[in-house]
Each structure stands twice: as structure tokens, then as C-alpha cells.
Length: 113
Length: 115
Picture (cartoon, rainbow over the protein chains, first blue to last red):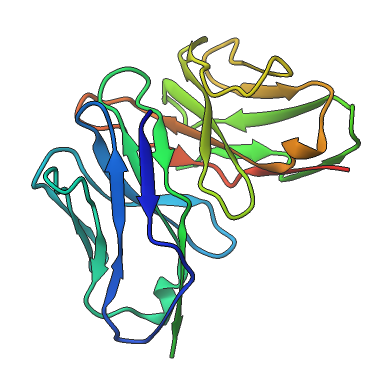
């Protein structure tokens, strides 16, 4: 079945550091790919998405590019802030059918001032 | 506008008891999803409704779990004969199921603890 593997955490960075969280996927079809974020005490929120190969999703300074050849969707940010501290989840959704989301295990990011 | 709401926010019960968890989706959203998130894990799909019908219940772990959405809006997840392993955060999400992509909006979850 479909699956998502993401970088184990936790990740601790200093403010303004560069962030990469790796995500790879296995899917039978051509999924849409997502990054969701869960801030402390809040619900899951969509951070960014890409629906086809070579698409780049971006939001709040975060970016991820859908790489079909490497089945990857790595999350990057050039300069993290303390307010980026959260748990980040990579997810996929098969197009067609129920479009249920399949999530990775999550990566906890802590940014120190 | 109002987001997805879930009640109760916390539920503590004893092994063997029956529980109901409620989800109020965003008004007008036809699709509704239930997920379960265990500690340190990502959410796992349980069931998907399109309108009133369960279109995909492949994630329900066993027949102790059941969900309904009788009027195509509010949904209730029902767990019979609860077990300690059912302890988790139960998440509900809804979406418009537009053709381009499926953005699911999540509620805050119900934390279920089975003693």
C-alpha cells in the first residue's frame, strides 16, 4: 500500500538556520503531496501542497518540490524562526477514490532564539 | 467562518465501555474523514464519508468501530467495548472535494483515554 517515510526527529535549530526535512513516498498511482503542520496546542493545518511532478509548493517561506524520479517531497526553509517550532507531517493522497491522506510519522522542530 | 469542531475535547473511559465522539464539519463540506493519531505517530485513516454514505471504511481496525453521518453533516464515531489500545487522539477532517486537489481541514481532535 501507499506509504510515507519522513526524517526522524526531533530537529533542533537556531534561529535563521536552514531547514530541510526529508520525505519520500511509495504510491501505486500519481499522488498529490502535502506538508501539514501542527503548532503546539493547535490542530493540523495544511502548509503547502503539490499535485503533480515538478510542481513546487510554497507558503510562509517554506518550499517543497514534487520529485517523481526520486519519489521525494523534501521540505525546506532558508531561515527558520522561533515561531516555526511545530511538528511537521508529510502526507500523500491518491487522486481519485476516497483521497484519504496517508501521513508520515511527523518531525518535531524546535527553533531556539 | 467556523472550522471543524469536535466534542468532547477529552474523554476518559474504562475498558469495556462504549463511547461516542462527535464531529461538526465546515458548513457545506460534503466529504468527512476520521483519523486516529497515536502518540508519536502520524494520523491514520479510519473512514471517509461522501454525503451520508461511508465511501471508504477500509481503515476501521475492527467491528468495534462504527461511524455514521445520517444527514450528511455531523458525524459520530462509535467505539464499543473499548480497549486500552484504543487510547489516541481521534481527528476529524472535512473537505469540499474539489476536482483539483483535496484540502482537508482538521478539527482539534478528541483525546480518548481508556483506563
